[in-house]
Image 1: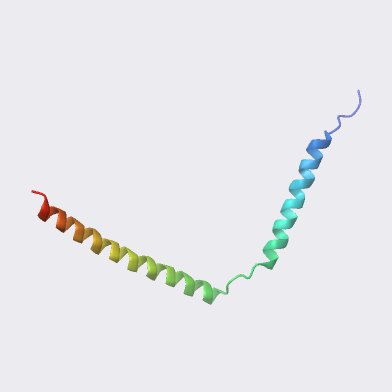
Image 2: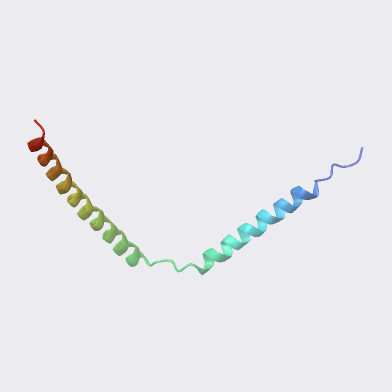
Length: 73
């Protein structure tokens, strides 16, 4: 019995996967990562924006609920 040989297609797929992940790592090295201060600032901006939009939606929802209770018996 001879040694089992990997099909060429499987080896090619493995090579493609390895090449893909090498490319991913290469691209990640090019990314401009924010500093800790920038990250905290951006996070605070997002939280404030979400809070403002939430309050606005609550006002609109409350207003529409009030209007509908006055219109419908």
